Length: 171
Image (cartoon, rainbow, N blue to C red; front, side):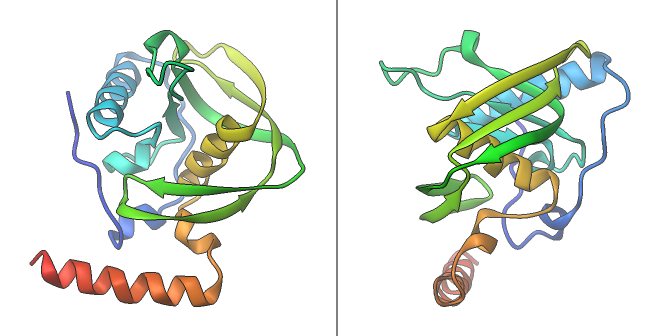
């Protein structure tokens, strides 16, 4: 089922998500819905809080060389923790909760993440480049942060001004 993606400035997006304790049918339904929602919105990642569920769960599905999001490549991460990060890269990011706005964000180039899959089995992944960016972006959501918080003060002010105009126009 496709769920509604909440958008900035919804206060829920500032919520720090809680660890998942039960790896049950309810969690599996949430993960399935998150995948469908992400694909329907043409996203590459989605955190549970973006569909108004404050749990430490996220999905990531990076397009392959043919620009296809292969479900076999889907990452479902429960209670993820970055155990190592190094290097630096700048990437233009966007967010389903901040639709229509993209900007450059500085992130670690290389990370190691530990997490659980939908069945509660411990996983470990080492990655860099776009996948590392996607992980860091989605994990920020779990802490109640949005990528726009990483912008310089000047860019942030410009964003806030444009965003207010956009919200007014949509009313």
